[in-house]
Length: 62
Image (tube, rainbow, N blue to C red; front, side, top):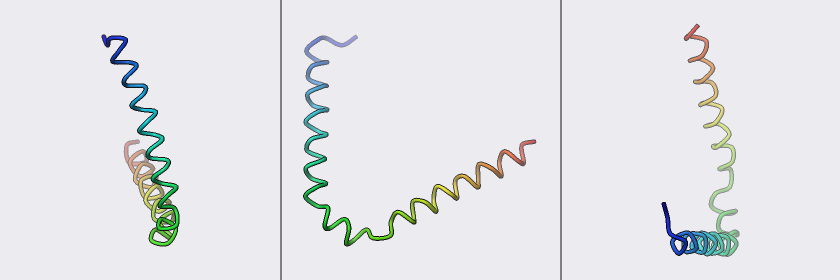
């Protein structure tokens, strides 16, 4: 399906991409803590809302 060279390139690209993303995130960590304070609660509320919708759907299906 893929040649050996394409697979090697894909693996190396993935490793480089992850390293750059980690470096960038660590560099901006102070900004993230300042500007995105409380965003975890929004994520929890969103997941809870999706869960409630799933429960309602399963109850109404029966």
